[in-house]
Length: 158
Image 1 (tube, rainbow, N blue to C red):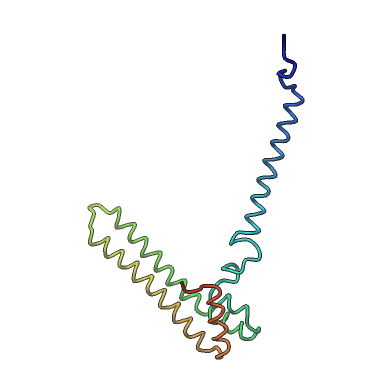
Image 2 (cartoon, one colour):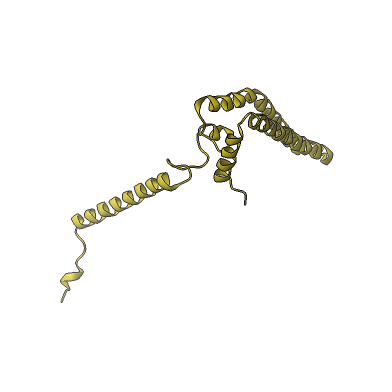
């Protein structure tokens, strides 16, 4: 006696199951992509770092136009110097990579190259702080309070 319920699936049934599995997989992938765009830090509507930035440039967008333009101009004026300093960092890092593969190996040269990187990064940080200090010195007391509150919201101290 044969059991009628254990008959092999027909080709039509297999095709239908494959199509349903494919549809389910597509829905899952679309859901993951949509969820990532909606809820990730990079998605639209996020109030964190993004095109407007999280520093003075981002804060400038919260001010009236003439005050915002003043901050943007200060940052634009500092851009060439900042790029020169960043190039100094890149050059110092290249010096480290060069010292690492030099034969014969000289630990003193590697240490000097690493110190050059530290110094170049410190120079850039000092320049950024100077631009920040110069810019905030031109803000009104109320604007400085707004900047404080904005920075607390964007970058709370932990």
